[in-house]
Length: 141
Image (cartoon, rainbow, N blue to C red):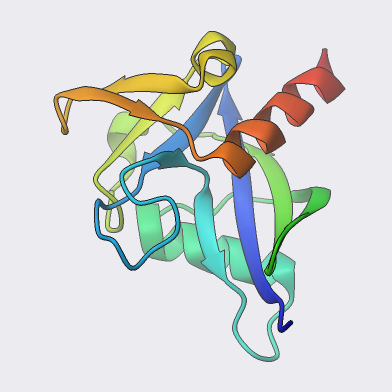
């Protein structure tokens, strides 16, 4: 089985975690679910370079630095997970990919659901994203 390598970011601010409400289109993984920002690693690109490029493309934000948290393998996907402090206000981010973005609380993440003002309803977290965030929260507490 060929593995798909992606780089994703846990961006945290004031004890909350930035998540993207993924577009509700059927040909993507976890459509209409809350997830972490990031995406595919391009040929010849390191995971660290990829995560910063993806953040720039998706929310016009490049953290000063990122640190590797873990590699998470689920089926054919290898997620290279980085973490960094979000140093700007959410209102200063420009959402260029996805339906909504929001800082989720640890309680939202544990519940696995969060309300979106844009969709007007409660949406679930993608299961791997919830698992990764819970592991991260456990590691820092």
